[in-house]
Image 1 (tube, rainbow, N blue to C red):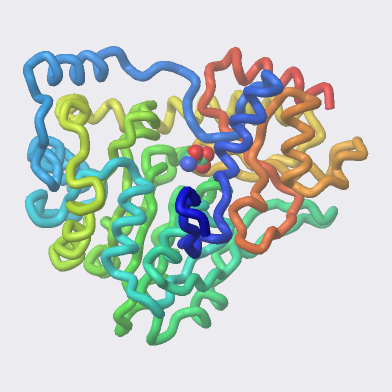
Image 2 (cartoon, rainbow, N blue to C red):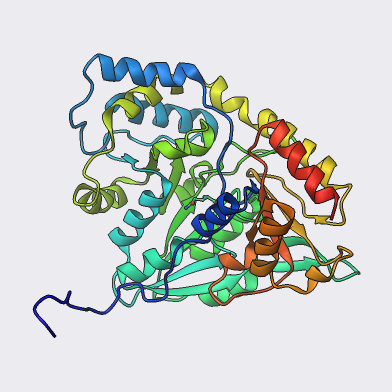
Length: 398
Ligand code: GLN
């Protein structure tokens, strides 16, 4: 090796490339397509929230906050969880502010998974789970959601694979990762599902990581069942949530992890040497905004209206709509469209849809490690009505 050459080393994540969200957003930009791929709102957040952050900055809240997050925000989160889910987390010892949900997930995994430990995930799964487990030296055991089909063979819904989950859990299972409301399918867990999960892990030393970043997007009058609403699960769970989805500020990257004291103690050991602290003015702004519960209590109606508007437009296309009880994602089966591109795999179909039809989507196969094709793609409908209308016009020409 010459002295001017950068030394090479084995990649810690050899299988990882650029995330599908970044790839599809770039493709959408290249083709000036309407971006219904990566999940983020295209409308502004509340000016009052920005004013509260401005006020924090202008009143010199600009130095390091406490490592665990400012008390006002942790107290507000504890209060919210108590009100909604009935569990009391001690804000001093059980709630930590993170730089978004993804950091909360990685740090939770790094704090409890040792080399050789097994971690069970349910695919389709959010793309950060597996690399986070890899970084911890853990072994990912994936079980697949059951794909239910109608008589014509099109995907109609998904079901939790209880038998496969039961088989996957053994003495080496350190952690099970669940996600409700679920990205990408939009499915939500019911109380009975939490009970079944509790049955599976009772008398084991398996922990739970529950990714609930879409907790305030559950529709048709249904409830979100958090692990915090289940006393038995709460005692062994890292509960992850985020303000980005709830307050239309995905770029602020502020979230939190609530977990029993012993889990939080280990979590904070990793957190303090990873991000150390999360930016101060955002925390003050969010803490002030959080005192008004209407900002999250109004969210289901807000997104349900968008979902219903988008679905009624999609009903005029050849896409088969899957149910969307939660999240801001709508999955569709494209196999019934009357075009030759139905033969394409999901990733190629999304590329074609972006470059030729001008609407970007995300292939559900990207949420599986071993690409699993079911002819389903995901749209994000967290968009202004005029964005959705333009996208629907293009999709209705298919
Ligand atoms: N959570 C977002 C989604 O599923 C994307 C976040 C990201 O781009 N990493 O679309």
